Length: 134
Image: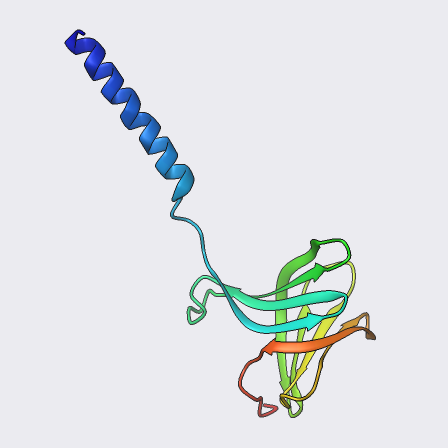
């Protein structure tokens, strides 16, 4: 085996290894940090932040997963509005206005509204600390 052939094989192996590593560990993946979660009968609603939840650039998002279709049908920026009873989270963009209400009371179900009408209810599996309504 010639030295040229050995070097070519070694360079090829390094190149393939680099491609495989970049496919496995791209380094640009940001984790989602769930702030609130409603486990509804029809829809699972996740209110989350991407990346560092403490960073000023960490935007609040709303993701809706339709159980019947087994698909995410909304994943967009969201607003958060505290009130004396709990929190309202609503989408900023989208064809419909979706609002998730999570009460301060651990016994209360979460309620998902579509265009102001109750669409689904479920169990809160994660919530923020109680709001003060400010």
